[in-house]
Length: 515
Ligand code: ADP
Image (cartoon, rainbow, N blue to C red; front, side, top):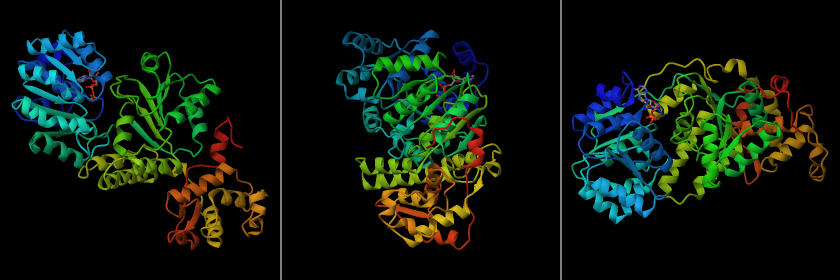
């Protein structure tokens, strides 16, 4: 094993977890490896693959990922090929013949390939002692990126290659997903290797401010010449954000599924080769990108679950140096994610499951406990972790401002007019705006009219959203409603704090777009 590691890959020692996984395979067991992104999962199947006679079949979800790996193996003098839908008939034929003749050490395929009869016949004739499932969480319907085609090939594999050993690797598996993978692929407990998901060099931050665009501007100003990814949840949002940065002369490229293939790869290439430091992207960007020096990952929107979030931030700091992972979000993101779930074509049971995951994501977003520990616990209930001391929660004493008195004023107004006010009404009344829709409803006569007249619209908006997000106000049918919890604030039972949203932030940032 060590000899191959050195000879083919040029490394002297194994990284944590790698040796154990490889040993399981060499002992003839089906195995599962759960290692953080960047920890070297590919070597876990490439090394046994080089030791076995015959072809190792690697099942991988993405063409770009496959191509990169095949190129890198070829550069090392290893006979590797992939089959994908962009190849010509002739190219396909050539690869299949090599497979049948036993000339390939590695063959990468997407799961959809199993629908192709010719491929199945080839596979049957070939000698394939070992199958690797990359991104194995895609097999599990409880995983965050379930691909039905990943699961449906299992009976095919069992029929076509009944004696082949299986190794599944992934970075993101909750205990539930882990058990599901084990069951589907016949993997015993003793052949599961799981290292901590904790990544010491990632500094986690949640909502350092409520003014997201401005935060990004000032962050980039302070981190010039560093590479970073800014994720947004929709294509439209990506383009808007990219334009906004261009307005401030911040060079960036975009990446999302709506771009032509050529433009996507060009933009990716510009980012990877350091011609452009910033990419603004949807979650279509990132898998298989092995850029070591990504210094920050900013999420402009909340992701639907922590697995996706963890996978996306896993791309930062692969070189082991400190990197920031910042989650910005707003109440609208939660609504959007809820909308995605409601609209999804899935069983009620599955939707409930997604709702639970979203709920955990929301908890992460508002917890005041250590963020690093929160993530570790999410993936592994039994792992004990010390507080990291560096995430935004651990440092939170310095970054909060009281909002109890403002909250009480807002809740008092809603108490008087429960279920009658929209968010905009509340903001207008609090700021004392003599707008038509306020006057016509007589809201200018409310006792609290104008009590927050020194506050900006966006500041009051932030306060109202905070109250909704933390469950002190309920927003339904475009109207605000009081809930039991509201009385904890009204009766002075709790004190509320939020991110710096007035003086501190305004002093720090010198660009203003606020109305
Ligand atoms: P993952 O799939 O876990 O995200 P990769 O397999 O792409 O990670 O590996 C990440 C990087 O780490 C690659 O550049 C790889 O060559 C390197 N790497 C893997 N194993 C070792 C090792 N034992 N020593 C040093 N570098 C390694």
